[in-house]
Length: 375
Image (cartoon, rainbow, N blue to C red; front, side, top):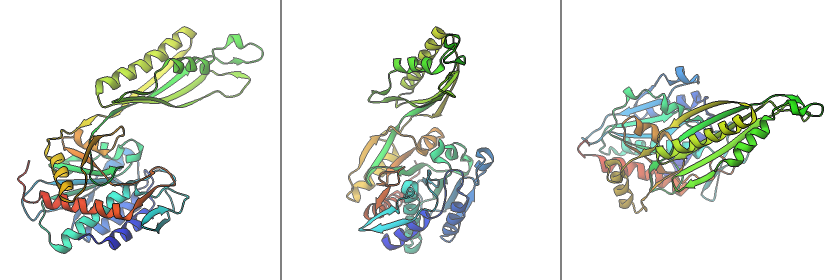
């Protein structure tokens, strides 16, 4: 049985450990102590050497007591800014922050739920297969922890990432790929009052390009956005440089590629017409992921949710998560809803009953998988 009081206490402890992206060192040590006390083998990989962060990803392993698939559970340790000095408040069954910071339920609710499930396994001597826990760094800054994870340390047959909105029972099996686009339009500076005709206004060139772009939702699978524009030095200078940052996403890789090309072509056309120059930097941040509904990991998640009386909602998402990276490395994984709400704001909160339900779901998945033949 899940110990709700212990679960809440553990969660509130974890959110008070500062761990903004790139500064997860203290969180790693906190989790190392908790997991070793549960008899788990705990290591950190060398991702920090690549990312330049305080620490690498944390991996914990527990040998199974019965035959069955090796299950991986993942949540990320980092939080966005403002995430220092978090003070959680529990009132009327709802945990929120005091208001000056995010709460950090994204994604410490996932971490707390997994730890509670493993604690119950140990205390009640419940049969289970091999378990691998992966707590990643820098998820919020482009999934760089998962991207640089040492996958040679893992042997999981399937995985569950706890980092999604939606009620417990939500199973995200599809997500988009994403391109990040940076464009610099280089015009020519001139005095705006004396000889503006000698200049090329980079802001004007960029504006003409953006006005021709189709932005927002392109179709049910595809979105495009220009999110940041900066440039100019003074109102009396024809601006010679403007920088645009944007993205394209789609559940279909070919659609994302097409939209990225359209953005680039529109910028190139505007630059050529004006005599300006263009610098482009396009990078695919993560690949699309699609785990079929009849796959073992989806069937296990769905079957377990039904047994708990949860409503299994199998759906796609427009966001990215570590789930994409695991699937790209050959570990079939889905993202589970943990009912965190208003994430990435200072109004973030989670209900105690939902946190408890997530822990129960994790525990039930482990129990259900125990004894299954390896897939």
